[in-house]
Image 1 (tube, rainbow, N blue to C red):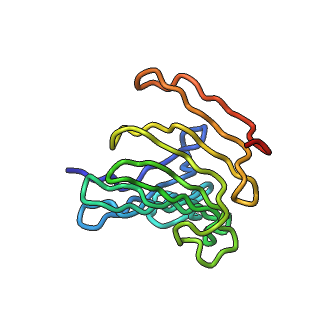
Image 2 (tube, one colour):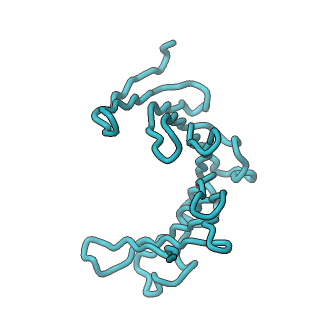
Length: 168
């Protein structure tokens, strides 16, 4: 069975690779992905080359891997400015939490940072559907906006955005 090694995103001309994602495995089990900005680089196809934009960490047995965290890097490709933590009940995704981690030494630590966004999911494993997203004020405590998602069967048919700032 083949394992995906890289994906490439091309510019509007279709000639230049502007982003590349590298996939990392441990004995055929996906453990990480790394997304690089490769715009203007002649070596854009080379693994590990470019400015690191995102890193995602996976856990689980082969072909059942689940994303655990995503780290978003600043323009320097070194400092983590945002982290997404994924929460599961068994194998079912139930929530994601986006944290502002800019300037934090422990930016990789789950639950650390200023909470910016929380999304809640429902459904069976592998078929989870987003139900609501809550957006937080700079304090990471006050919900200032909410998005609700409406489905007809398996199909998303509408989203509703509400200003919740200052409302109970």
